[in-house]
Length: 120
Image (cartoon, rainbow, N blue to C red; front, side, top):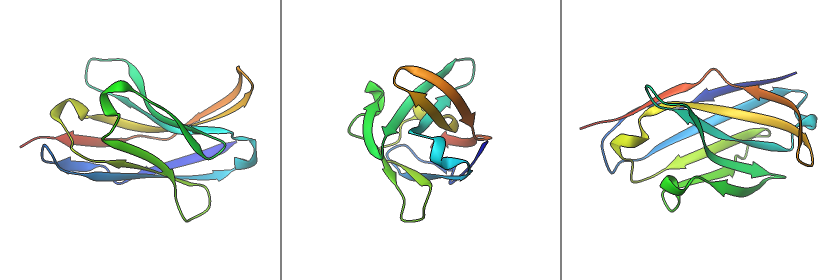
């Protein structure tokens, strides 16, 4: 099992910045893909950014150039730096960790989510 704990959400003004962090514990050696998803009110959960083998691999188009996913200095910590925030970035952000064998998903773990609200 892998446990994920997010922190860093809150209220930001349009054009502002927020950093989210995700601390992973447990059987982290099984994880090879980690990233962030979000779910806005009334919408489905969407992928925001993911890393594979510690390298950023994918961003959803709406956040490219504004968000950056990176590995933290602390072991098993993943950050999401969010700049130039927009009201449409308002959502609950979830940390996601996956154990994959190629294209096959073996296990997937979710954090509890952290609310991000962008409003003036």
